[in-house]
Image (cartoon, rainbow, N blue to C red; front, side, top):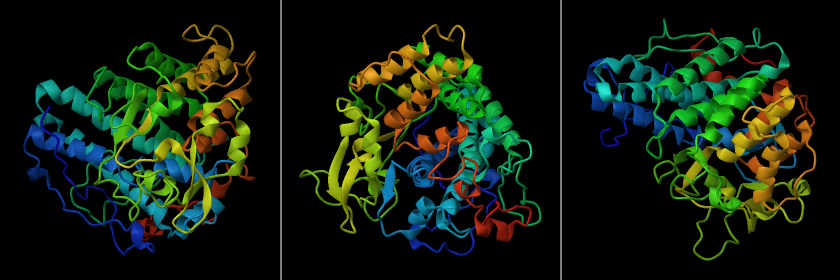
Amino acid sequence: MKKLIYIFSVLSFILFIAPACNKKLDVLPQNSVTPDQIKTSSDVEALLFGGYELLQNYGAFGEQFMLIPDLLASQNQVDWVGTYYEYGDVQNKVIVSNNSIPQSIWSNGYDIINIANTVLDKLSIVDSADKATVEGEAKFLRGTIYFELVGLFGKPYSDGNASSNLGVPIVLLPTYDYDSTKNKPARAAVTDVYTQVIADLQDAIGKLPSTNANFRADMYSAKAILSRVYLSMGDYTNAATQANDVIESGNFRLTDTYDKAFNNNSNSSEDIFAIQETNQSNVGTNNQGIATFYCPHAGLPAGQPVGRGDAQIDPGYFDYFEPADFRGTFYTQGTSIAGEDGNYTNKWQFFYKAIPVVRLAEMYLTRGEANLMLGGAPIGGVTPLADINMIRQRSGASTLGSVAASDFIDERFRELGFEGDRYWTLRRTKNDIDGLGYDDNALILPIPQREIDVNQNLVQNAGY
């Protein structure tokens, strides 16, 4: 593969018009790319790498794919004490349609999708030795983004109305030049988006290598994300099968201690897929980024980076842990930029580190829960009890003698707190979220108003 080069381009069907109300979250215009500018295999690969770069963006896994679900499911997890009111509106479930956070998620997401579409459109000029991998990576990016978008902008699959509930537009062809008379796709049904996600990830699995460069997706990255998709659908057989494939691959192992899974310069031994943050994708206290908001502004040991400290641990979080469970002690006391004292998770305490998107620990919990729900002989030959105890033992929690579905819900919170999982878990298991029903309209982001302004085929979510 050729040297990593990033191409930044407006490759989305979204028309960037008036600036967002929060200057901090404005989407900056970028240079357009025309088909005749993509001439070589290196050009296509550079464009693909630009898609990975956008995964690091604050509108994706660099922040909002994790922080925004956690603010929506904030009870006993996170308290927003910052001055950026739009984040507080997310936690308080009073989002308005011109809130810039949904806009940044939507815009960045469809930029990545259009990059993937463009790469797929240009496969004919990719070197034959690289073609399958490049196609697999493009479909991994597209499938992963569609899954995140449909989960944030649509009702949960679990509510039983996926065929009629609106998801997000499915766009499978590249847009090189915006045409206001053509580029106005309507929202597809949730079930149709899921069908596309599964097709993309299955295709990716068939084309990706079993290992890849540190920042790039491989076969098991796609399997891990696909296990999430199936679990959210209640398809326990496929969820357990995909998770088991990852576990049994031998490519990953749990870190010796919980803390070693975070704040690494590159992927840890249990990172199935991670993004590699740089000073271009997170530049500290004056910019976005998960470390910016979770790292305290004051009260840190000498030499540790300073963040804004806007996202503190809710005191109720600690009630989920036994005294010997290390995960309940994995925090730092500090002060926010606004002077609020509190506790901060240590998962995101340093800038410019690898940020895990999906870890091996999650695969154990997914396989265990799915096998429990299925009953009978477990897929992989390991009991649900053994899987959950594998995760608990690493952190010093007591081993369980029996296990129920609720144990897996709570264990995911202990293990995956502040990683964006709680929102997805409570919705798929039909549990209330912050006093609201799991499918309440207030738990879904609004379609950005400026997207509706330029595309009258987009229907707004109820309540906005």
